[in-house]
Amino acid sequence: MAPRKGWRLPGFGGGVASYDALLAVFAREGARDAFEELVRRHHAAIYRLTVALLRDTAEAEDATQETFLRAYRSLGRYDIGRTFGPWLRGVAVKVCRQRQRQLRRREKHISELAQAYGEATDGGVPEVSQAGRAALDGLARLPDTYRIPLALFYVGQASVKEVAQVLGLSLGATRVRLHRGREKLRQMLSTEADGSGDQ
Amino acid sequence: MTGMDCKQARHLLHLRFDRDLSQEHSARLDEHIAGCGQCARLSAELQAVEQQLRAGLLAASPRPGLDRHIAGSVIDAPVKRPSWVTVTAIGAITVIAILALTNLTQRGHHHSSPWVVGGPRTVSIHVLPPGAVASHAAQPGAPVLPQSVLWGTEETWTSVAFPGGARVQLDGHAVAQIGANAISLYKGCVHVDLRDVEAVFTVASPWGAVTTCDGAFSLSITAEATTAALQVTRGDVCVRMDGDETRVRAGESVDLGSPAMRALAL
Image (cartoon, rainbow over all chains, first blue to last red; front, side, top):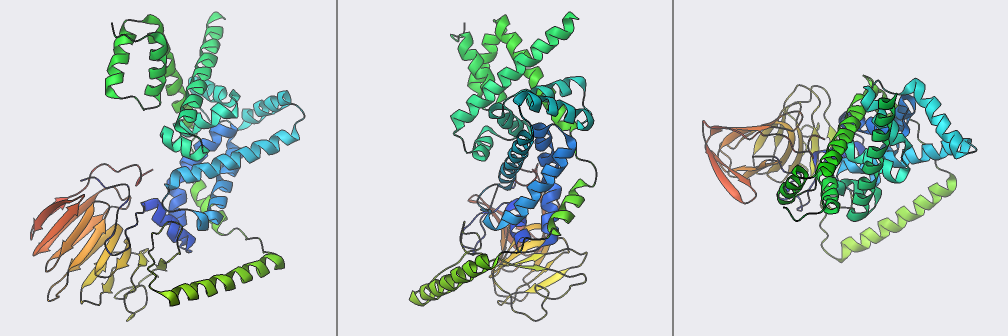
């Protein structure tokens, strides 16, 4: 018998809670180890997501920490009927967007922003195979509209429905963004592969 | 011929990479790809994109100890002190809320549940201190409070006495919610023995509910809440899940374990 996603407890009013939701309830009531367990369970996925969105490991670490800080302070507003993982990823996306805006404010032009991205990634990009790095570089060059859904989809094996929930989009709109983003990434990578093959 | 053109095939290809394609459509798509070089090339390229992206993301592993650093710094982070305006506003809202709640209670029956979405918080938390034994919720002699939660942290067992006479033992890793002659076990181990007790006792878990009226059993859920095992030592117990009932008798052990669902092991 497989465990169900949530379960009803006789005599408790008929609600349903997941294990993560329970930990979140504990954490907001002050159980330190419950929050530590939530961090343990989710920090790797959040870190990968922030790396994908910010393309810099130092920035990603800061963004991961800020994500959990905001989540911790928002636990009182967390609705235990929602799955915790997508809720947390939604917080991470907001943190990354804000950090990008701060970065943009420091730059005068979009082109300078791209240059700044390149400089920042040189020192802090994770060690990846050449192909993996090309894919992450390609992802970084996509506009937010496509980059964020793709990153959410591939980090933690999220479903299209979960991505739609995090971004507050319809299923159809989310699919369109995923399809176009994937297509643009494919074109980018195949152009680069053709270019390197010509040399 | 599948009757599918390349435009349709392209759309289905993306649905496949969305993990949203039905088996029937998948078979039709494969049939089209087998006879169309252009779509076969597209499929291979999209496959490569996905593999590269996964490889890139998987390589981005957090440094060891980042979780401990984050948990520590987040929990210990200073909280901004609210201004006197905020404090006054919160005070006023609290007074109004108390008045409203008092009024509501006086008008009639009001049932609260710990899992009402967006409802009042009625779950009380007790973090068991090291060495807490033979007590309920770290308060020796205290009555069982429905809806209280035990969060075991130590290698010790805690005994919980219920008003009906039932007595259960929870190990130091148990995370459980206490009800009236019922426990919801999220992880850890619970041992129930209803010898000389006239009561029906239920242990609810993600695998289903285990009920007995005269038996003794242990239910163990692993630390990652991925597998569970039931061992009946006296009498018989009833395991209910999604309307199905199974009877397990004294001396029998049942491995309830199976691969974890995403909700329990993200």
